[in-house]
Length: 416
Image (cartoon, rainbow, N blue to C red; front, side, top):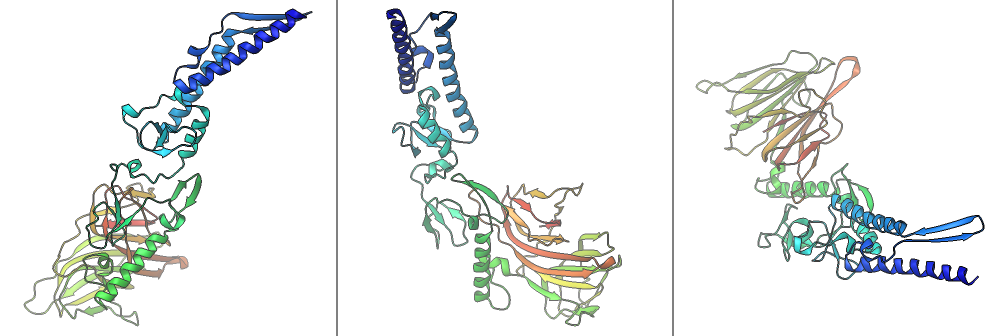
């Protein structure tokens, strides 16, 4: 009996020593096996029953404990979450370790073996957290952020109308419509509320500055600088239109229930021949055709003659700019299967024409880029074959930053 008690005491002391050693390894950053003192094996027999406790089992468990720590730390790094001895998100389980979403310098590196399991769990929770620290977004420590009048982000607080802001968590209204994001462990879907708010602000400002024309064109009012004329007239029967004033930078959009769309200009004596460029021409499966033309200059008194079921004139730029769109991009790609398009350079004063699309185009911007403002200039709808209606919408976008993704464009074309 005494031997049995002695054996149990030895086993208890061995297990207790192992746990203490593992805890010590958590604190000092050493491999757990380096703190184990056990060796050999303990064998206990009672009749035909036999129990063996071998030190190799403890070393195997120690290695598995360390491997779990390393694997969790590696996975967190893959999610842009790092343990650091420097500045970051404070942890309640260890006042010497923080969490950051940018890779820390070597001097602040934390050995995964030095992290206890409570801190690992807190790091996992922090991987889905929004940090208020600007350094986690690539800015230097102490940088202050400001919102400009147009809603975009800047670090220059001296800009007119700039308001200092803090980093806050996103809500459904802060994200573009249809854009999803994880925020503090919750998956949210954007409604585009901010986009609509800034659009409404720009529209109202433009009307106030220059009623009737859509704004003077230097800030948010740029989005409203288009003049739209239905060339067919109020009865939608016209086949010609007389230009009343000199106009520059004109777009002519035609739609017809057949493949026949004609365009001609009749100028006054002494006026130069009207130069125009066909930007886009297509015929859909229901035999409805669309044509878009660019005209640099039209003199007052010029008569536009056309054969089309729908005809719209867009004077979309300020007089004097006279910048002809030189690029036309089929957003669906050559195979017509693309559902998104990545902008690879900064684009200004661009237009998107969407055919058979019931949604507004949407834009996913890079972090820190301003929200892409857009204005629908016109929408046409023409019954086609078998009662299928074809819709054409044209949008004006003042600026699109490089790296922006365009979505929800249907059969879309980008002109700039």
